[in-house]
Length: 148
Image (cartoon, rainbow, N blue to C red; front, side):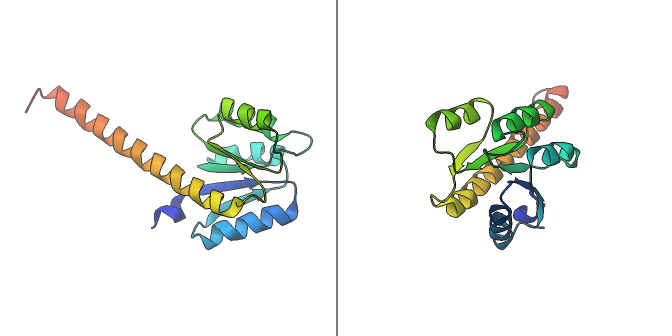
């Protein structure tokens, strides 16, 4: 199984065109574990499915993207959240990153290429973290037996 196939992705956007557009683009990149939601509450209700990545729109009702982001991070701080929004206000992007977003992408501004790049970056980070965890397990194992 390729790495792209093993990444579980949620797409949360109240715009049906954007949801379908991003889903198709991500499928074309080789990812197949994609679930789409039309609002933040639907996404929150399905967090037990343990997605690796959530692409989250900012401008939604009744919960906006920052509200959903904070709730997701309280549920599981290890989920990679990427805000994908038409909101260009700098303070919104700063707040999203402050509350734990991995990245902030502005819709329509070369967003498909940026989504592809951020998914690759997340996979790189995940691979490095797995490698580091494996090395730490080996160090613990060898420390039990003393130096070799």
